Amino acid sequence: MTPHQKLTALRTIVTKEILRFARIWIQTVLPPMITTALYFIIFGNLIGSQIGDMDGFRYMEFIIPGLIMMSVITNSYANVVSSFYGSKFQRHIEEMLISPVPNYIILIGFVAGGVTRGLIVGIAVTLVSLIFSPLSIFNLWVMLSMIVLTAILFALAGFINGAYARNFDDISIIPTFVLTPLTYLGGIFYSISMLPEFWQKASLANPILYMINAFRYGFLGITDISLLASYSISIGFILILYTFSIHLLRKGQGIKT
Image (cartoon, rainbow, N blue to C red; front, side, top):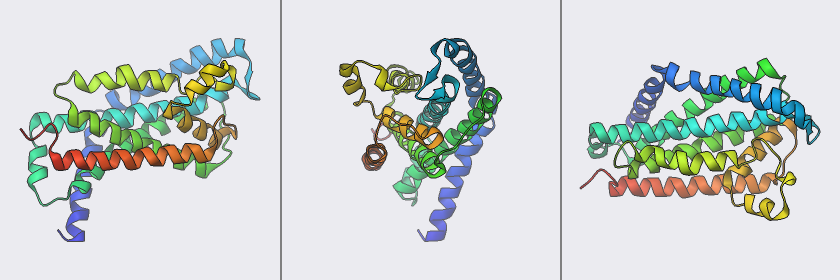
């Protein structure tokens, strides 16, 4: 394929993926906004007033970056896993695989759709947070780069889940039993400095902790984890998941029988 043809193929896949979730925005974009508003009311206003300041900031300000990142993680993942499994279920992914379109173009197209949904939902949640607290940005580059890296990482993870899924139940197992616990234990509502020493060390095994802390640094300038470690882990996981995803496409995992 010529570069122009590849670009056309990529643009087509990305457009399809964006239109897919945009058509049902009431189901894809609105629910995270409502859920976040409830978090702010319950945790920010009610519980936060009892907790007081966290690392020199009001509790409401402290949890905003974590809630934004949580919405980006869940939506980037959910968009790709449901879309790719849907393509398998409807059997039109096979047409893409036998076409001249390179595997990396197919993968980037699905991931781009997940990243777009994650970022749109992240922006929507940020707008909701403005109702409850003013936002301050300490380092714009760190904030933007980390949220994009995180969206890419979990979009790739969703692709892998979609490749292995054999039925609709399989696309909900990982989010329910792995992704959600790791997200809630990733420092959204607390600083790991509050934990006993053993649990502080145990928390370091959670990769989401690094992403949330780096994103919080972009907003507030505070973090429990070094930025170097956060970026190294994020980029390292992206490279590993991208390589594995390409391998699954070449192998035809869950597609070829």
